[in-house]
Amino acid sequence: MKVLNSKKLAQEKLDSIKKGFSAYAETPELANLIKKEIQNQQLDVYEDATEFGFWFIPTRIK
Image (cartoon, rainbow, N blue to C red):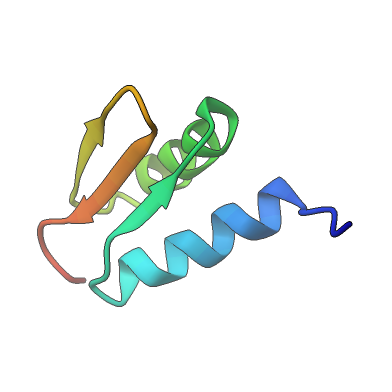
């Protein structure tokens, strides 16, 4: 069984967003880590929260 580090996973997803790709988070914990970094780095991202998870879609690439 592989244990995932939430902070590392959030950083990987944030790197994808910066490259212009969408990112998906299954858990609110992971989504909150991603949201926090999006705000810190002032990225322009659309968030779509569904009953299954959270999508982060870049609206503009920096």
